[in-house]
Each structure stands twice: as structure tokens, then as C-alpha cells.
Length: 200
Image 1 (cartoon, rainbow, N blue to C red):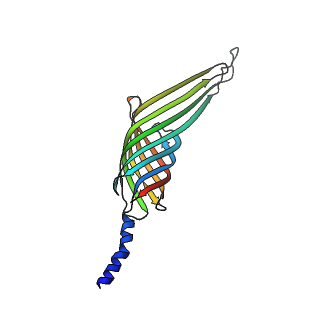
Image 2 (cartoon, helix red, strand yellow):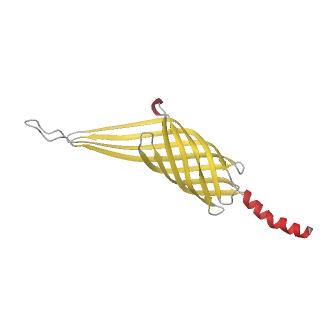
């Protein structure tokens, strides 16, 4: 009986180690969709670097960039009587938003392949807008850059493909920004690949 128990313990040890395995660091990169408080949609990228202090607690630095462009054209009515027709007016706007965030992350690693996590991230958001008004005889250009406080509250789900690589099925964040002393309530969704380093 003792020999049987010893063999069973030796066979069980690798399984226990596998269940408790976690990387020292994780690097994520992928596509990101950003829905603004005003109803606009931006597309871009999201990347992060996480250091895990133990199997459930880590610290994350998160970076993302989102980009969009819009154009409008005003077609004036036809000329009436002796008055000349009004000129056509066109407006085009290119905008981008970059986020620089950091904070704690909690992960649940009891499942062999599925790793849900949640985080609270604080940092800054930087918005830049380039635009122009264009008529038949003139062009007026404008631009604006603003920096504001930002906070992200959310989480996601990673699926481990191997010891070194995982697929981030989803990362969903409520994203607060404070541009122009007003609060904006935004949403961000990201998907991509996670590279895992320093398994322990």
C-alpha cells in the first residue's frame, strides 16, 4: 500500500504543478475598437505588459491608439434670379486618441486553459484633431491637442494555446475620460495574442 501511495503522489505532482503554473510576465498586442461618448467609433490597436507577482495578482501597463476620419459636404441650392450660386463647402476631420494607463490586475488561474481577469487602470488620454474647411476659393485648416485624466475598469478572458502563447478572446473596458472639465463615458473592446514569459 505505501508503494502504491508513493507512485500515486509522484504521478499527481506534475498535474499539481501544471494547475498552479503562471508566467512572470505577459505581453499582449492586438486590435481594439473604441466607442466614444458622443457616438463615434474609432479603430486601432491595444498593447500591454503585465508582471505577475503571484498566480492571482499582477501589475499592468496598458497602451492603445485609436483613429478615425470623417468628411462632410454641403451642397448649396441653385442660384435664384440675379444672385450667383453659393460655393460648395467641404469639411474633413482626422482624429486620434492615445491612452497610457497602469494599475493592478487580478487573474483566476485554477482552470488549465481558461484565464479570466479583471483590472482597474489609471492614467492619461491624449486627443488630437486635424481638420479643414474647403470652398471653391479658400481652405481653412485647424487642429487641436488635449491631454486629460483617464480610467479603465474592465477585464477579459485568455485561452491558453500553449505554455508560451494565449489568445485573448476579449478584453472589455468601461473607459472614463475628463476632457474640457467634462466626463466622457466610453467603451473599448480588444482582442489579440498574449505572449507568456518566465513560467514558474
